Image (cartoon, rainbow, N blue to C red; front, side, top):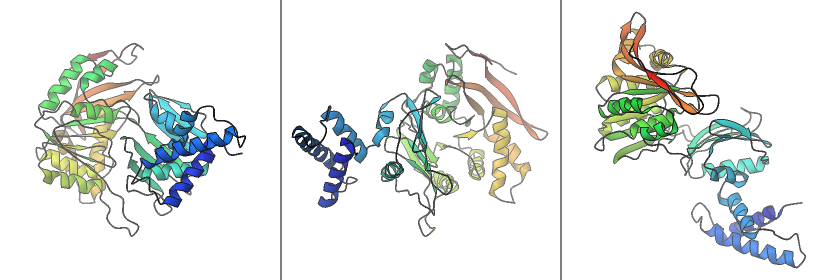
Length: 390
């Protein structure tokens, strides 16, 4: 038997279709229709036509969430401690709070999952279908959405990376225990001196948050140009231009890649160029920009700071056969000033594990000086660290 929320939701949808109301254009129309239908349902229930509503305002909120919000997932979006939500199937909805994952117990039908994805993609201009079974998009609240559909997966797979705590300064990371005040001062001075910084770490280690905090220390006069696959960085700067990639159309035209965005960014008179994440041949374009004297920042998935440097020496080779490894190695060593490696601890806390400075090429590797190294086994109350100079 349909629930009261389902019945009222269907009635509101029918009225929207009948009246030709597009909620994407007139989102405010949903509120009045929902309240009106909830009142009508309550009146019929009092007359014996259906179960009584125990909480009319609560029912209205649930119906509104089904129409314009995130349906049964809305409480997770309203919870500031939830930093990621993912759906593996109709009865497999998970959430991560403070770095620790848990099953939510929420159950969604296949139709609800598809409707949810459709609503989330509505404002992004992106699509997911058989011809394009993957999609990355930014949601209006700044969250990042990733969807994969069958037959790539058995069921619809949905990941929503949220940023409930927008951290825009190194001081805030100090307060959270992610780094100590002495290291924060070193990094702050490096940013203001126009140094190029690579932020590395595993998934969920806090790379984007650390990058945003570093950018928050930029001089007010800096013109910052950011390029990303999808918008994630939130920078409160006076002069900032943010660009994201674009998927090809149904005809296969109109795609804008990260490599193209890096090249376009150089024409915008940047004082600093920022690549949200380097993962492919765009590494070459970034290195060429940094090697021309333009300060930059970016993130990269890696197991350690040294592994990140080795990886960054490999990615440019994906740009074509005419790229010489003998050129890449010294270019990476000369272009980067600091590598900041982030770490996700088993208890869900995040911290900066190490900071190294490239010191030139030794044989077939880049020599580094360790600027900072965190203790191997931090106490639960803090993230102690020690500065080293080797």
